[in-house]
Image 1 (cartoon, rainbow, N blue to C red):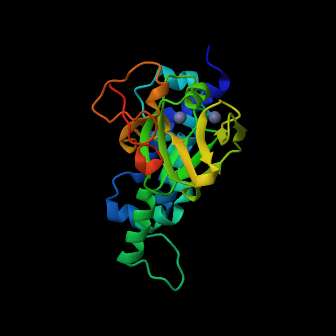
Image 2: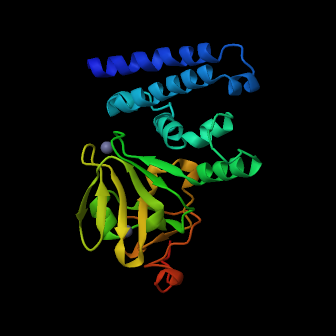
Length: 250
Ligand SMILES: [Zn+2]
Ligand SMILES: [Zn+2]
């Protein structure tokens, strides 16, 4: 049975798209850009939808897995954190002494496209990744097996200072050497902090699918079962990451 919290969130999700459309009405894009009232009202309606999606129980979201929940939940942050950029694109940014010429708009767009927002399952924790990954792979090591409770784990490796917690207060714990960051509400494993190398390995299954492009498998010596695909399968690590380049026979 649905809780009243879910019910109110679902009503928000049902009603606000029509409200947003009503605020925009028959305005053309240039008229919408010039109309602050319409702009603020429409973006507020989108924020409410995004917030409501976060409030929903994961079980309700799971029942409608055809919907892009992560993107819906992430829109609120784009509108909030990148306010300058959204407003700038709508011609609303107030920048004394700095005209919003093509150059500044271009920089804003680049920044937004590089930023990848990642959330835990319940939405309590959000991290942002402000760099292109150094490397992405599937790791079969026994550490990843224990931590993730699976045969292997997808990893997206970034410079440590490019991976920031922007909402929530994840708990940290160490299985072996390196601390893992986990949502204390829903238990989602977010990333591992590889302190010695100043790297953070974000769990690849949290990224939008287009943002996870694994190049190979590593630590296949620990593999529970062979995973046969056309990627290289390294016994340990590739040489450029401190291994020997030795591969396994599958
Ligand atoms: Zn969570
Ligand atoms: Zn591993």
